[in-house]
Length: 340
Image 1 (cartoon, helix red, strand yellow):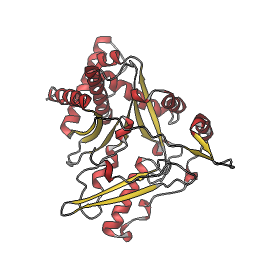
Image 2: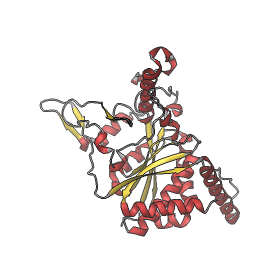
Image 3: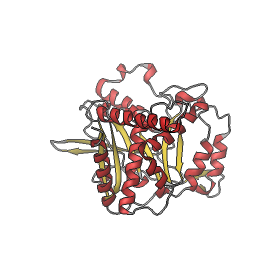
Image 4: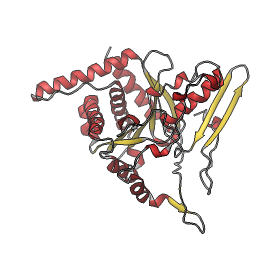
């Protein structure tokens, strides 16, 4: 949590809201910290990472080394709102809207949750070998269940991302049960999915805006989910992602309604992605030693990223209270060791 003072403040009230604040902190003879705060209405995680990579490339090599194809695209008309989703969501968020005095203009208020006491942040890593073994173990559980139930429909192996998220979800639920942190028997996992390549027609990956949708997976009885274990969690997550193949907007409205109405303390969300390759952002000083997302301190989620060790694995940051973190770390490490 020591990195929070290094992050610049971004005002979120008033009629004019800034989109970006940057603070550079110099540690003499040690290094620097580049910290940014952004308003999420400006762009999503993929776009912001592309902005950072473009900025760092110019800093290191000069603007002349950038190809025209790599430049961010700012044209918001590229996304066709055939379903009038914008109007539906504005009506849904009506309660979060403020009107300017003497004006019909409306401003969306930021939701600023309080920082709970006794929180700690930790980084967990699955190297390429561990994540592969986890994926293979889950797939073996799928096959075992198929044989026991005599299913004729073959279940596809989970991706490494789904396997990692499912394993983390179950470890978190077990940690909660150990320390008695939650009285609600419902649990919710949120995967934010990039829609650029899934739209019809698709839009370029360099689009500088928001083009993600939440994929909300709800388990009404977490006791049953824990009994089914990591394989059951992976099937829930995998099925939700597979449903998007039928249409990227399928179930999106229900997902957003759920996020607005559900108590936030039962929601576990994923931010970031290993595909963003945060550790390849080089301003000319070399690769970053550490990349963090401090909003995870308030949102009860995991910040998923590529491994800082360049081995094809994953790492993620997690913020929990100290007792829950100790229980989670024990579950996480012991479970992986059992796969060796």
